[in-house]
Length: 235
Image (cartoon, rainbow, N blue to C red; front, side):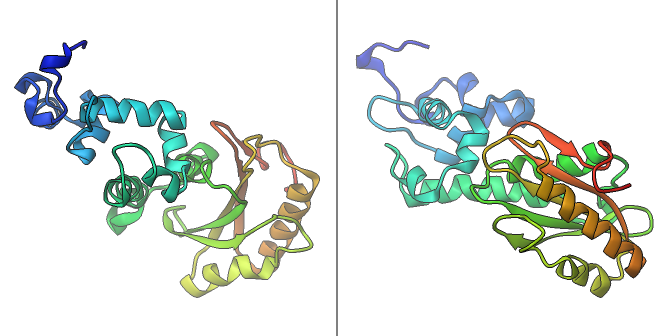
């Protein structure tokens, strides 16, 4: 919407009621709002020359969408025009709340019936990480997720990853199975020979400990790979 400079609006309160993101969310639900409008609700006010919605649009463009915004370092987000520490913290907090929601209620614990189920829980967040992180899903006898625990940060290879460390949380919690996931920060989820070697070692250890290893996922940018589906390390 083009607004003459003399009538430019920089606060949500200055917009017509039908165009205000909070009012639209209340009447239509959050799913009806654009990402920029949802950001505008967090930002509350714009800056000289831009409404809060326009600031949201600028942030999305600058960082390459929600994934890029999620991936952006806190300091870099703070330094954007119209931001600062408080607004950057609100955005990062909102993203983190969304990540935690899926695992919050024990009675509503997600069930892993396929690699896609597991990827849906972690791919968004892990695709934004700038280093390799390895996480373990702890599963009960019905493949319900008890917890997702980060056990390693750094290069994921057989010489550095202590396989026994992956199973300690499972043994403490009495988990009957685990699923492993790690990310490739450069974005290509193609499993490396080291990924296959680590997977083979994890599967063998699981057999000895009587803890089933359901899969090992490699998370990239917008894509992921199941090593079990490809028959890598699970033979």
